[in-house]
Length: 86
Image (cartoon, rainbow, N blue to C red; front, side, top):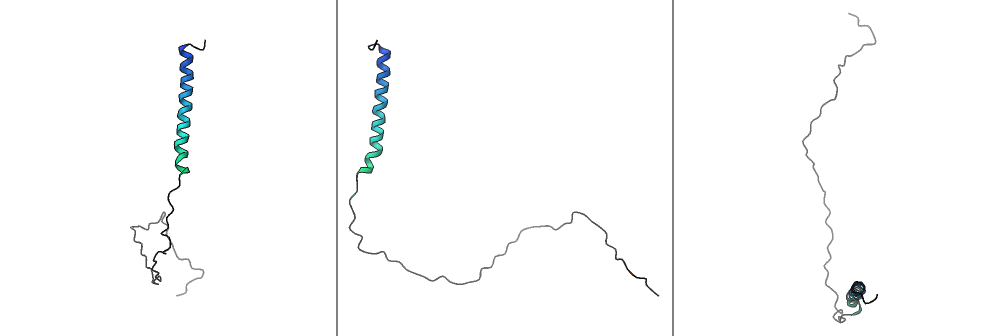
């Protein structure tokens, strides 16, 4: 029963999968364990040049093509509230 070829292939597949998983975990975790050499050249500060911002007026002009049209037209007539005498 345990010596059948089918049963051995299942156990071999499980063993290979477990081995691959362990190797993958070792490959991912191993680089984090190692520390590089500490640099002792950190005694000099970097040179930084400071500048003041310049004050100026910013002019922005936006030009876009456009048309102004009305949706409706209506006639406008003046109305008098009184009589006109001649």
